[in-house]
Structures are given as structure tokens and as C-alpha cells.
Amino acid sequence: MRSEWIQHKGRRILFSNLTHLTLDELRAEIKASDELILREAKNSVLYLADLAGTLGSPAVIDIFSKSGALTKAYVRRTAVIGVSGVRKTLVDIVIKLTGVQVMVFGSLEEAKDGLVNAK
Image (tube, rainbow, N blue to C red; front, top):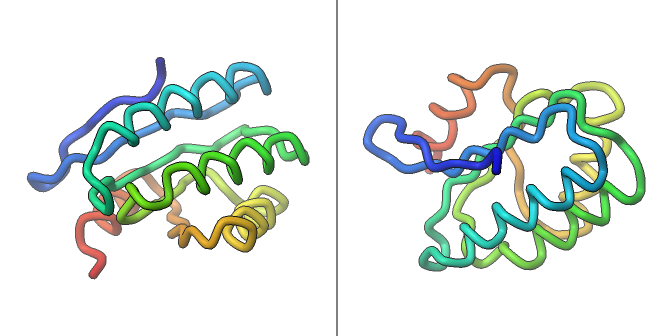
């Protein structure tokens, strides 16, 4: 599993390294991270995903949309890194489909700070 709890400024963040995964690997990793999220209290999870090199396809949009719908009540804030161009457009589509607000950052440190400092 490539998802793990990390600490930043005294706060727990679930970090999912989703870089360069095949569709089947992505599906399995999202399922594993969803299981971790669903064990937590509602509206408590800070979630960060690195999407560099993630495929952009309707199947990927479907995976993220189903995950967002399933975990929405448990996730307080979501941030992603590794998105630009077409992948940024795909993030926007997932936001529209799920209603999950996603913050996009340029680096891991910016994303961690953004998650713990956002109001």
C-alpha cells in the first residue's frame, strides 16, 4: 500500500502516493485509502494525494468520483499535487461530480501547510 498517515505541524494527514500507477493499481490503492478514511471520525481527515503521472481517462474520473462520494463525509480537507494541464481539468471534473473541494498545490510542503492552515 502506498498510502500512509504522516504528521505535519502536529496534525495527521493521510498521504496517498498515486504516482505512475496503472489503472488496476490506482483502483486498488484508492480502495485501500478509502478503507483507512472510513475508519476515522466524520469530517476529520486531512487527505493529500500526489497525482503526478496519473492516467487521465473516464475510468480514472470514475474511480475518483466514486471514492469522493464514499468518503466525502469523513474528509475535512483534500489537497493534491502533481497536476497540471489536462490532469487539472480532470480534477475540476471530479470536483463538479462529487462536490468535494480540492486544493491544488505545486509542492508537497505547500500542500501539507495548506491542509493544516486552512480554515
